[in-house]
Length: 90
Image (tube, rainbow, N blue to C red; front, side, top):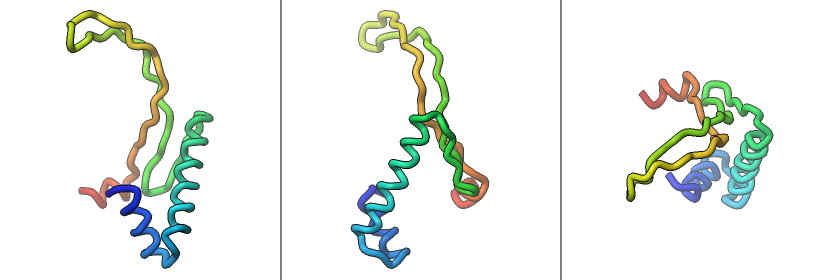
């Protein structure tokens, strides 16, 4: 499902315009992004939790040349699905 398809689904389910649905979806995405950039967790009970995880520096290889390279440490966003979401997918 694309963002455009999701907006259409939200608009139909909530009986609102596509413009309003797009604004709402963008606000949710922006809120999650802002919270994660401040290293806060975002939890939707039953759906899941977004959080930031630290990935340590490590050594790797350039797949083209086989030459060893250093991969720097970084922070990455992660998502852990909730029980209801797991059950819905299973």
